Image 1 (tube, helix red, strand yellow):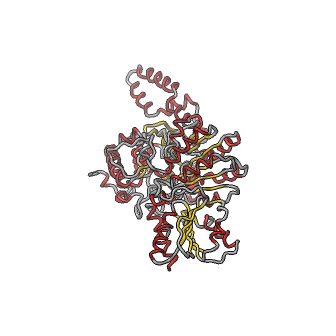
Image 2 (image 1 turned 60 degrees about the horizontal axis):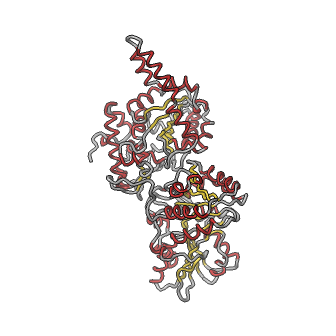
Image 3 (image 1 turned 90 degrees about the vertical axis):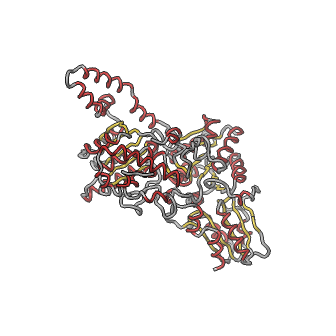
Length: 618
């Protein structure tokens, strides 16, 4: 497809060389470009289609990299990347050696901050703006924040510290959605700003009076239509944002690129932190995404003509199996509640929500609140099941320790996307939860490797009233090789045994497949090995260390950080018991992980079967 205007833009200055009248056509080209590219590579589509006009207007009014752009969440930055010299990179979007799906300072001078998790951009922007003030540097700092981020407390902590920064611009991208539909008081407040009948009644009366004024009446009405903020302020007295110290403007049409450009240009000489509230439509310009924005939030490559149903989780995924099983258990045990943080569909909890809506809670992008809320439910004799992606659950580390584990409360954590995760890169990996869970005394953690184990152990864990516990499972489908192992109901299994083996390979979860691959390679080289698969990873199953004492060499592989991971716990257990063999560990170094497929990531980190085998033959 040809993009005549877009092809002229290789940096933000090129954008300014085009006329204002060309901007609507350029926005249409960008929309077609993103639909075409994301349909081929996968990526975040709905959020980016909704922010095209806004991003174009911002780049027309401001000058990157002198002016700093920070996106929250970072997945709405595709148009920004298109306008800052990375159009060609979209052929390899989120692929190994390709461009990231999030802002990346290593990738471009136009990306100043990584924002893979929600409600972080405002605090970062305040820090950068303050640094500019101290260093007497020119330029503004623009934070583009989705309305879903306003369900997280960090946004309000940031707003409380804006310190009269007249070089700070905050854009509220109000699309009435986060990933699942926005919920709660903040969403209701924004709705009031958009729809208060007093405002519309007063506006109509003022316009009626002005229309009766000869000659100038219509001109005044036209001016007011472009300055609705004055009327709104008179009615509301002030907004929450003004009370926090911002100059508030809005709500405005986030798809009127010409109006937005004029606004941002006219507000350059701001005297206070500026808060601009724009309304956008998630999925704008692509009918399937407009109708089902949740389904097109993050997508794999797809047929542009297909329309997925957002109420149906991907078939044959751990998330779906978990959601369906928990719904079944919800019928047997009426004290089960389900909690998630803006991830109803991603975690498979839509099944529970439809069946038991009074026991389902989506708290928005507020993982810390989710965990302490669960603690309160547990104190009230309910069994909360908290289902959050591993990468997001780490944001509630203090609440896990203090509010749940310290009090030995009956909370079950269902940790989705555990282990390595494809495409989204270093901000979305589930590699820390085994390490931080293992620091909590009494915290029982299971890591099933197939669907049968997930269903069996989920049922076991909801029937006990012990202290906090967790069950963690990977993204996507189960491995056919691991599915064949079934479920023994044991806390660990010897899944491969060879005569006279003096080498043991040990792992858990999806990494077990790579360990089995390594065993096959070693067997072909004439080396006898046994393979152990853990289901319970903390505390280590009773009897495991004693059984492993017989081996001269043990290789432990895991999709977890090496320092503090389960391998280190097992090694300490063995050496404390008097074992004197050779210990080899393959795990994730505590550094950034590239955006690539899981198999590519494993090869890079030395966690694939071939790399594991080499550790024993070299």
